[in-house]
Length: 388
Image 1 (cartoon, helix red, strand yellow):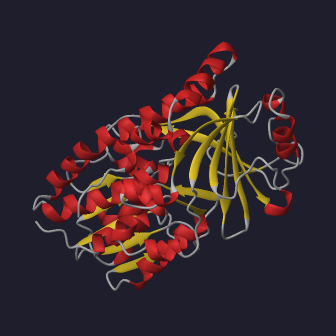
Image 2 (tube, one colour; image 1 turned 45 degrees about the horizontal axis):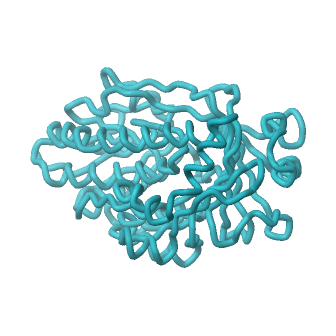
Image 3 (spheres, one colour; image 1 turned 90 degrees about the vertical axis):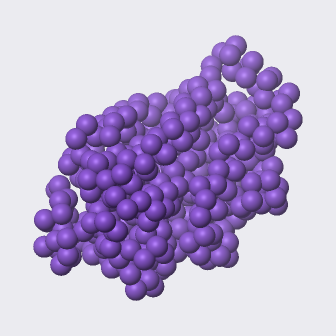
């Protein structure tokens, strides 16, 4: 049976991209979102070439290119000495080697571009302020006026759609917290580059910084061990002006500690991940993005995996006459890819947070690796092309 309409639960990056990808294949999409209005929490976002390639095919990329920064390099440096360790070229190099750009921007900019494309499509309808405890075809029929052929759970780490899928994965706290804040260029330390994504590596933690063209400043994310405040993804900093764990960074370079101590708008995100399990019910419901496989941000691929999921799900649904088989095929295609990305993130966490002699050894190894070799290590990730 050809799929004629889809109900997409969640209007984040995964859901909006899915709506675009499905509607481009002639499928009517109803996007159901519990929030009464779309306000993207968070600050910066990295769009690597594997995701930019798909956004280009969805005609969203030009709007992003007008407002984002394309860093010239992705640089690794010591958080204790600020000594450069290694770098991977980006900018023009990314376009030439991986066939698509590497950009950094505010999360709200991507959501706004996707939302504009979705609301401009005659095949897409957005339903805001609709909270569903467990989406089903019958409930959705009453809400949108038609029984959906497929239900796409793009409702994030606390997915309600996941509750209706047998043997679905479960959410668990990773033991890590991300502290996010922005810096004005006038108050940014000298070790931050306006042309680079900079990752500072130190004992038991790391910090990622990059420029945001929309604000004229920098996005800063500090990740370290911490405890969870509960089922939330955004908590206002408490217990002091920043709630940043400065004791964790006491052995870091004084300029880094000064930057963290001066953060006035820090917010913290307890980092949850979703384990292994079924992503679809072999009939009419499927999970994408964080609902299926929320992972730690150590490979900066959370948004990219959601975008890839949306594109490949739409391709399978359009190609297969049997919707159940299409969902099975989607899961079989995506699981190995996501597992490999997750493994890369786990390796990065281990390497980034090393302490003692192992940290010194890591620094030596990184400093000896040429940029070309580091770029080649990313070909499988950034050069991934799911086809048209």
